[in-house]
Length: 318
Image (cartoon, rainbow, N blue to C red; front, side, top):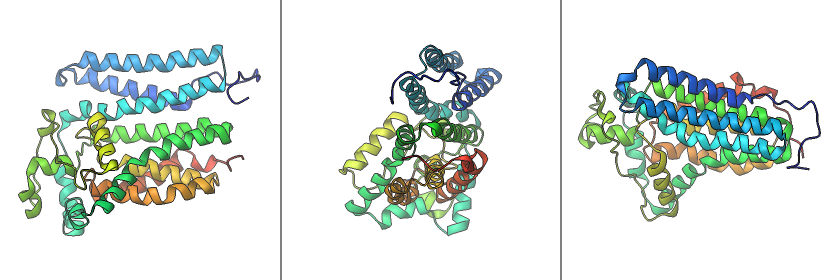
């Protein structure tokens, strides 16, 4: 039975490695809050949020120990995925005290390309069709980790824990970088310095500009588009001036593509191939990332695959 109680008396009732990764991240960020307490407007609230999320993880683990079924395991994994929607914008609360490295990245981008791809791309390709294609690619991001985990759940349950560990831990490792090396991305930085400075190649340090505001440029493209609207909804819900380098969208998508290839899930690989290409370009098109963020994300995704044990994955069962 897919959702029935397990009959295996030797079932592992310990915490998932993905849950341990979440607990470690929560503990590390708690320490950061405690050591920089006076830099936060509501440090006690940030601590309480972590206690609440950790409590949810522990509660589901206890339920699984009492009723070790696949449906409870799915709830445990689902909880970790849902909580990513909190951990991601939370990096803004932690890193805004450090300022921004955008001037360094924008200048490096200028030196590499001679212009700003995030500024030029959407202006060069402004048609409604191209815009929707880019935004569809960006929205497809959720296919890469949510649906992949569910497909593994139904096709090869034995690999679910490891697949979940790689994806969840990959996210948390990205978040650690975001906290200590804040980069807001073009949509925020270009707003701060103004279009004239972008065109002139004048990229200066904005310090803690975004510690008081979350204002950004209006997203480029066809504003009446369906996928444009979906992206704006997601932006309003969870986007903050944080987490640009490396692109977690590209990093996790690259990680998943390598995992799917390793498990020989060829049909799923074919389904994801076009969205993957679109996603890599769309991160720059919608001005969420510098081009070097996307490039670094791809390299980082390959590193995550190797470091987190991607080679241990086996061919996914029928």
